[in-house]
Every structure is written in C-alpha cells, then in structure tokens.
Amino acid sequence: MANPFTTFRAAEHADSMEGFLALVVPEPLEQYFSRYFHDGVLFRRAMFVYGQPGSGKTTLARLFEPVALSTLLRNDSGPAFNAVRAAVGKTGALTGNTSTILGARVPLESDFRDLTNLPYGAEVRRQLLFRLIQARTVLRWFAQLQIVGVTPDQVEAAGREGYASSLELLGGPSGTGVLARARAVENAIYTILGALVPPSDSQFHQDLQRPYPVFDTLSEFRIEPNIARAHHLEPRLRPFVILDDAHSLSADQFHALRTWVTRREIMLGRWVLSRLDALTPAEISAEFGTADDGHGAPGLSNQRDFDVVALQGVGSDRATSRRQFRKVAEAIGRRYLKQVEVFDRIQISDMASFLDTSVPPVPDDKLGDWREEIDAEARARAIQPSARRALEQAVDDALKTYGPATNDLRVALMRILVHRRAPVRQLSLFGDDESEPSSFTFDNTIVAGAEVHLFRKFDRPYYYGFDQLALASSENPELFVRLAGALVEAAINRVLRRQRPTLSAAEQHRLLREKATELLTEWNFPEASNVRTLVAGIARRCEKATDTANAYLNAGANAMGIPMAEFNAARDSQPAFAAVVKFGVAYSAFSILLDRPVKNKQWCIITLGGVACLHYGLTLALGGFVEGDAAELLSLLKKP
Image 1 (cartoon, rainbow, N blue to C red):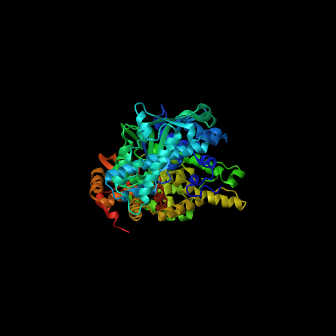
Image 2: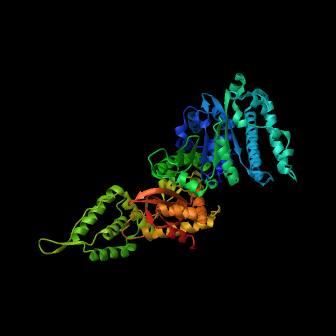
Image 3: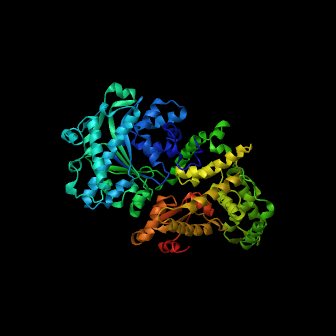
C-alpha cells in the first residue's frame, strides 16, 4: 500500500480487511474501555463515545463487525494480529475461536438528516429517524453475516422474554422475514424522502403504520451450531449496534437519539459515536473539562443508564493520559512503519531509531550578549564573586544530572539564576558588604527553561526526538500520524538517496514546525478563523511570559488561566465566545481544565494544543499558565 504516514486516514483506505487490521493498534481499546472488560458490559449498555477527528472512532467501530472478527480468528499473521485478537478477546466479543456478538456499524449519514426537512410534526420525524436507524441496523447485520458466509435462511431471530408477539412486527423469527421487513421499512422511508410532494402521515405505507420495535424486541440471533462454528461464530449471537458519525444529525435529532437509546427497555448493546461538535459548550465543559476529583479515569463519566467515553486526553489527569498516549503512538509508529517498504527492507521498526537526539551547542561567539547581561545583572543585584562561584557550581552539578554539560546551557542557566537572585545584601563581621549565598533546588524543568530560551533566542533545536513528537500530537492518533509523516517522508528520501535515514535534531525541529504551521493554516472547521485569533492572542501572552529572563515558569507557558466564575459567566452570556471554545476543544486547537485550584482560587485553564505550541514556539510541557480574566480573553477575539 502507499506510505500510510502520508495517506489521510490510512486505515480507512486499506484495500482489504487484512490491510485494515494490520494498521490497527489495540492500545486505545484497553486504555479507554478496560473498565468494561467484564461480564459483557460493553455489549449491554448504552455508551456515548466522543472524540476529535482522527481519534479512532470509526476504526474502533469496524473492529467489532463480523468481517473483522472473522478475519482475526481465521488469520495467523504474526504478532500484530495476535495483539489485536487478544485485546478484542478481553472485551468478551470473542470466546476461544468464535465470536459472540453480531455487530453492525451504521453511519448516520446525510439521508438521516434529510428527515428534518419533511413537512411533518416533530414526533413523526423522530419516529421516522428511529425506524430508519433500526432498519439500517438489521440490513447491516445480515450484510455482514452474508460476507462471512451465513445466509438469511440460516438465521433465526429470538425476542426478549415476554416480547414474542412483538417479534412478528419485525417479520417473524425467520432471518428471511426479518430481512424482508427491514427492506420494506427502508423502502417506505426512501419513497417519502424522494417524493416530489411528500404524502401526509395518514397516507404512509402500511410498513410505516405498523410498529417496528427492533431494539426493544431482539435478544439474540441463532444459527445452527455446525454452520455457526464453520464460520467462527457462536450459535447464539448477541446483537450489537454502533451508530457512527452522530454529529451529522441535526441538534434536535442528536438529542432525541440520546434520549431514545438510553431507555432501559433496550437490552442490546448500542454505542453512539460522535465528534465533540454535537455537544453544546456547557456539555463539553461538563464532560471534558472536569477538575481532579480523584474518581475514575480521565474523560470517563459513569452514569446510571449510560456511560461516556472520550477518545483523547481530557479532564484533570493529563500527565497520565500523555504517558498512555505515548504507548499508543509507539504502537502506531511500529504498525505504520511495517507498511513502508524501504524501512521494512532495512529492518527499521520504530521511529525513535532514526530520530537523533544530540543537539549541537550554540557557538560561544553568539553568547556574548548574554554574558554581558549576566555580569550587569550580578552587579545590579550585588552578587559577590563567592556567591557567583556557588551559583556556577550549582549549575555544573545540575547539568551532570539533568542535561549535557554544554557551555550554552551553562550560560542560559546562569542567566536564569542571576535574574532570580533577590537583591539582598548583609554586612559581614569584617565590615564588608557581601551577598548572602543561597541554595537553589534544581530539577529538569529549570533546565527545560534554559533550553526554551536557547531555542527562542538562537533557534537551537528544541522539538526533536520521539517524546516531543508524541507530546505535540495532543493525544490524537491522526495528528500523530500527520506530524510523524513529515519526518518519515524525509527519512525515506534519505534512504532513496543512499544515505542513512537518521534525521538530525535540527531537521526534526524544522520539519515539525513547518508541518504544524501548515496544519494550523489549514484549519477549516466551524469558527476556525476565530479559534486561530484566540489561539494567537493566548500565544502572545505565553510568549511574553516564556521569554522573561528569570524563567519564572521554568519551561514557560502554553496556557492561560481565567477565574472559574468569570469563564462560566462569559460562556453563558456570550454565545459567540462559547462557540469558539466549543470548536477549539472539538478540533484539538486547545483543551480546557475546569476548577483547577491554584493560589486559593479556582481557575479555568485553556491549554494550547500541540500544533499551536509548535507554530508559536512554546513549550509542550504541562503546568505553565499566564493569569488573565474574562475581559482580556474576550478582547483577544477582537485582535487580528
């Protein structure tokens, strides 16, 4: 296949199920759903799965259809397939060498939304929506069975206990009858959609006049044991539906769908997959901006009748989410590199192997201005030679632990420490003025601050190595693939020119920043222009804080904090601002963290995404934010 790193959504363009599964990594399944890996919970409850574009929603949906499960079970294609099969097995979808569920992915594409244009009351339009969804689900179930080799006449439908009469409304227990009834319902709705003048609801075809309670009635599909086992199926299959792209529905349809699928009467498993666009700004804040309450995993909210799962790092425990995503990124890199012929030929299997992490120091002759600044600041703060020597020794000791002992880092760290030194003097016993020595507690964040200063002043490489690549991806698999694609393409070109594939730190830095600028410029989602304006305004504040000589935020800032009450008031009273926040979060431009306690106040922290940080030259580390207020935040939207 073509280079998957440069093929937009490569998994969706795989030319076979084997090719698709070769690109699937199981880590996200375990990361986000492992708490449901018991007693078949995944396939019994209503679940709402939200994610940004490229977060893996559709890939996940396709994984639970019979064609994918059958391919996994009959294929022994090495460790890649085995890892996916093992992960899927933990969900309860597989038992031994058979699948236990009959899954169907139903894309809620444009014809569902077209129902909103029909000249009927709201309740009639809702019922048409629900019937079309159920008919499409049945058609998809049988289409999947036929692909794996089971025909409708070999299938029997079983209803829930006490619902035997309702089974007749679905076409009876025979598979051929259930399939025929679904086709009739779909055709009747298509007739209405395609009519030049839609009929009144009293003139609907009899297939629409009769109830059609598929989700309320069905409990399982039964197949004769010998036939089932021959096709890697259990004789009794639990029906399961994944409603994909729910954000394509109108707002009224989406909220009606949420109410409908969470009814307790429905016993079959049903997932609703959607982008965050479908939620209101308040809902996004409630679900995906929660503070650290110490309960549950990030992005997961358990409720009595349904569950919510977010396929990206949200909520308070971003550090854990980032560590988990790094594992996902490593797995994606290995899977995708396996498909790149030139790398497979020279046995390169992981990205870190061709990303050089050695950085050439800034030449001494360029550091003259900083040396002069250090001398001037030391005089202004009355730092005596003995105290300065103590600082220099502290810097040397720190670099032995946290960084290469290069001269540019020494100078950058001394500049920070001298500017942090309080101008306090005391009289010695001998009558001489002497600066009071003080000790400094070093950690890697101060060294990171020195590295950021060197980058922003002298363009010393900063965005290099696999860790920075993973951090820049905002916990989004597609964004990781697109950023990594720039590096992979450059490495491929080097191999084709008979050079070593290794990319220098400087080249990685340049390529990642260029790609980020390209991606930021290409943003074309709703409110993209205003989101870019807000991001630019926040970035300006962060740049100013990052460039302060004393690096008071260590590695610098990439976020802005607004008092929580002010943020809530602005979001609720300013619809335009609320829309910008909604789409900024939905498309990874930034993330929000609500009710963050800092300095005895509750804050909303708006953190720029990886693309914006790369473009504006800001740290990818978490934690550094500049303080602002709602008035300033709103004013940033008005500045070009």
